[in-house]
Length: 451
Image (tube, rainbow, N blue to C red; front, side, top):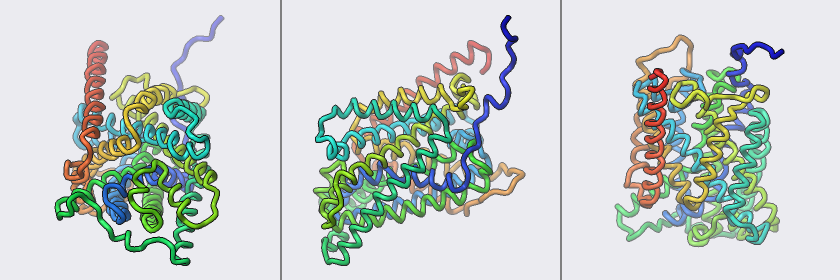
């Protein structure tokens, strides 16, 4: 005789709090580091010239402004849905909430797709001699990460720790090569102040720098992903402020230094033409460091970026399902592993579909554009939600910070940033898909009488 069916326990629908303060700091650093700096440095140089450190410095400031807003909001509302939760609480407009959530999810998937493309590019080519089909490599790459994510958050985050240490090692190698070049008098310091932006007018300089900053901002995205791990973090109200600010500060400093070294040792045209620009730096550094070993390190770095983005998107699906923005089935977890199985499968399939829609630069710029739009809304939400105090103490950003965060995000998302039209088209198509899903979900809810 079969056992009587009982209602699932609360524990079966909650996530395991496995992330402590140190692990969260490494998670944030590992999330920000990776594909952006390893793969798009050259494309930034192509937009601005030898002074490619300037866009990274500006991007650092913009990231700090918006990070402060996220820290305030995750302290007030330590739940998994992130920007979607903040938008709903601030504006109470389900359609806007869904679009913001969908844009965040798509930004993670386009970022993971950019990482998959970077994985199958020049770094892998250094090891295999371009013998493997790039698209097949990228798809296999996504499937393997999905399998790791299904196994459990503890396993995924521990893998993130190992990969973070590896990718940090790669960037330390770049900085050591730069230090050696300075001490031996190698490199070309004059390139560090060279701007190559169109016709050389003031407007061309402004749009060129803004465009380079918008693309370079792709390297800074990731800190916002960590708030989706709030329900898997121990004492999130106290843990998140330190973790996010340390993570952004460490990565921002490293990025500016790596950009300086890259421009010092390699001209902007050579950097622009490579999908593995930091490998070009190693080759030009005058240090006998194995090129294949550095290529392997870079592959670990882009793997880390993709892993965390798949994790973020699946947890976002879980959070939206619990908020009834997506069907409840999207919140289903594996009974033993307690990982969001439906969300992981769903986002992995979307990522596989997105892999073939563009190259690294286009996918990276799409990621940055989508998130800049989201960041503008989040910064406004901080101000609106000041009218909704909570009982517990939490971090509060100075009012000027979210104001400047919203303004800078909107400027970098605007046509002033001189991004290709294909980025707006790709983002528009993704948003249109989101609108279609919203309509389908509303029909289902009405049919069930749950609207």
